[in-house]
Length: 197
Image (cartoon, rainbow, N blue to C red; front, side, top):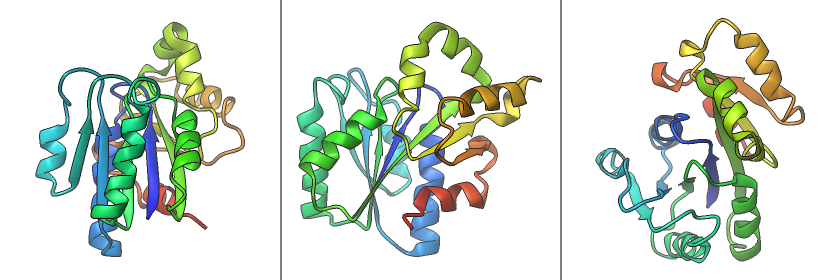
């Protein structure tokens, strides 16, 4: 089982991106996909959308996965591996989780996977405001990631190159692709996500 761990601030386009990745894997690679969605609060916003897509959905509630319910995430990963046995497990983290920290926990407690990749999705349209208000959070989401998708390029302002260069300054050593998930992810982005070479 290969694990894709998606992080990124609230509203960055994680669900839209994940659904396209999952559809590509099932339709083009003919492999199975299970999904763990984590939401903060009483109910998951995206549960119906994800369930309607035909994917396996295991929402986790009650708090941030990186703190209060870490053990539940590990239990869910083990349970999916033992019962569903998918080719791929996609984990959608809450918008305030730090993907690198979650990857470390999975590395420590789930030794049965064949590959683990963290993908951080950055909201290009809101990057200047998010960085100004929440810099420690949004920049820590970029730390220890394996791949960055700078999303919403279609609605970013005129200073796109400046924003891209600013983000690259935090993750100069990992692949970065620019996209608009709302307008369909480029094949190069999908292939980078699922490449474990």
